[in-house]
Length: 377
Ligand code: OSB
Ligand code: MG
Image (tube, rainbow, N blue to C red):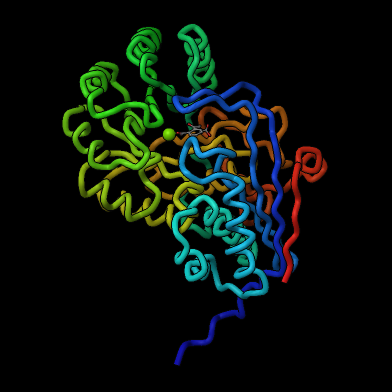
């Protein structure tokens, strides 16, 4: 006999998918390409007078990881939403039996799981951070600076340091690395600096990566291939500087393999990349057991995704500053009514109501929506 559920569960009545386009204030340049606008799919799940929201972090084309927006929308519409709408759920973990059988698509799965977490914490009348087990009301954040020439980069570092951000991450690529680091380190001898290569290097670049030890970086993020673990082990063995894995970690299983092998000493958790909050918590807990600190990465999210990131970052082992800096650094106008702005390098947890604690600015949202579809039972 199975125990009766405590409460009949939330009946998911309908869903909405929107695609929005937001211009970026400054083009964002990384080793794999340049982004001038953010195209963002937004999922709304509705149940019993409540709404749960999420953003997808996949790009139009597969340049960060393999998922694409169009592939994701067809996966959600054809495979997932028909199995979710009209069903009752006693919490986000009950999505597992629907989502787990499908291969990959963790960014798409994350959209559904995150919207369900928002909805579920609203049904519990708790902030998402509390429902997840978080321990803070504000989280330490740094900035991620795109690739630019040295004078521009120095000016950007200066303004981030002035604003009180807790760490500065510099995007690097082959040919734009040691010279940049030397100039920035000379000018800012005490700043907490990191670099992110977004997979641009190879094992044969070991001497170059080793030369970065001189610059007292907190870590080097994802130097090698997006699907590699074993070459990162070989590099980590030779470096004093910690390696932080981003693209290589799609799941708690990936994290276990990487930690057991010694592929890095820090992990960047992006809730959208790993399939949602439950997977993020599993990676967070595993890292804590290995005494490996984690931090919350970003994908230039608008207000919904940014709010999810902040709530997740309140878990205890998010001990390094995350990438969730002020929304006003990215967009002329955000899609939420609440201003998500850091103060002295700390981002307050949005709590305008339960769940993710932000409300949608529909008037603005409608002006940037290029596609809108409704799904009901
Ligand atoms: O590797 O962390 C990354 C942005 C787009 C794609 C990949 C990455 C990033 C960032 C920006 O570093 C983080 C942010 O400011 O949201
Ligand atoms: Mg990264």
